[in-house]
Structure formats: C-alpha cells, structure tokens
Length: 274
Image (cartoon, rainbow, N blue to C red; front, top):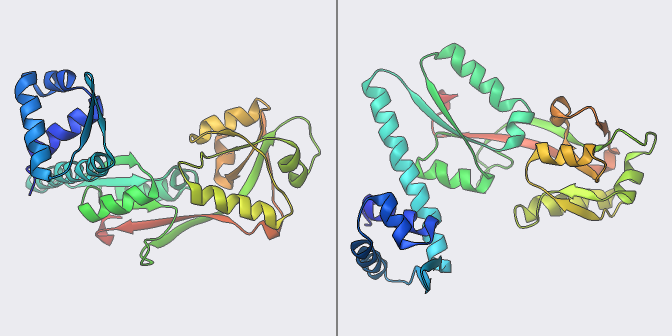
C-alpha cells in the first residue's frame, strides 16, 4: 500500500514537472526529494517519469497513477471533512456535476431541497466529467454525482431531460435550423474531450440530412454562446442554455427526427444526501 504522503509527493512533482519547484512547495530540500522520488518509482515497480534536462514528464504509467492518486487524495480529504462534520454535529456533502446539470435546473433544484431539509449542511461543488465522477464516487471522493449517463451497470436516477436546439446569431433572420447547420461552421466540443458526445451529435445531424462542418471547438458553454453571438458559427446546445444566452443569440427548434436529448442522471452513495 502506498502511503498518502508519498502520493502527495508524487502528485506535486507530477503537476509541476520540476523537482526544485516541487521541493519548495513541499518545504523540503531538492536532493532528498529526488531520492524519495526514485525510491517511490522503485516501490511502484515502473518508471513514472522521463527526465529531460531539468524537466520531468509523465510516462503513460505515470499519467495513469496521477489520476488514481488524485482520486485517492481527494477521497481522503473528503473522509476527514465528513468526520469533522459528524464530530461537530454538522454534515458536509461533496457534489460532482457536469455543466448540463446546472442549465437543466437539476442541481439547483436538489440543492434548494437539501437546504430546506438540512440548513446546517455544507456543500462543496466540483465540476467534473461524467466518467471521472463515477470513479470519484466509487473512491468516496464525492458523495453525489450529476452525469450525462448512468453507470455501465445502469445505476443512476434520471433527474432531467431536455431537447437540443440550434443556437444561432440573431442576424440574419429567417433561415431554418437545417440550412444554418449546413451553411455556417459548427461550434462544438473538442473530440478529444468527448468523442462519444460529438459522434452522437453528428449522427443526429445525419438523421435530418445535415453534415455540419466543425469550425471551432470549445468546452465552456458561455464561450460557445459568445462565439455564436459574434457570428462565428452555430451550435447544438441544450434548451436550458436559453436563460444564459446573450441577446445576440437566438434559438431554433430541431426536427423531431434529430432524436437526441440531453439527459442528466444523479448517482449518490446515500440517497438521504439529496
């Protein structure tokens, strides 16, 4: 078993990619840290870094360990917070969520209900990808997850569902959704961020006879709407984003054949938490 202090050392070095900077953060000398890092790699049994002059780069095994180690450290911190909360007679809930849970109203609705039922409960929110939330929930790093999909085993409660719409510049007016998707660049998520989501959107476009040309990739919905409002393209977004859009953006309904909705699922280690 790897001690948490060794995992903390590894995560710090991995994020800074430099032993001397990591040593300053950890308040130890550089030479002892270098020795500890080598000993840690020996204990794990694989090479975690490649050394390039003064910079360290993670190997594939190192990147995998960074994900797991980060989750374990977050889980440990969560346990400490919950124990202190219990000791003080209070309660602490850590919630992971995707942006769509906010725009669909599912997250705020549940938090309002929790606040009415248990006003002394403190809540920590963490924006996370769906796949990362499932792992964090398993490790105990979060207590509740709001994701775009249930677990592979089908666990999760559907708490929101809303259609996709075309977000388009306010001018020119009159063009239908199909024509806009064909004539203007599509602002969408990077394929590297969510290849499955992008593939599903393009397949839905194909069902209505449209093959959009991807023009700009962006992960932040606010940035997507700003780009659309500036006339740089159109976007396929969940209907809930209408409440957050600038005046320079208008929304058009899609044909029924599009057949794709945004779904939000809630997963919890203890249903009493929400």
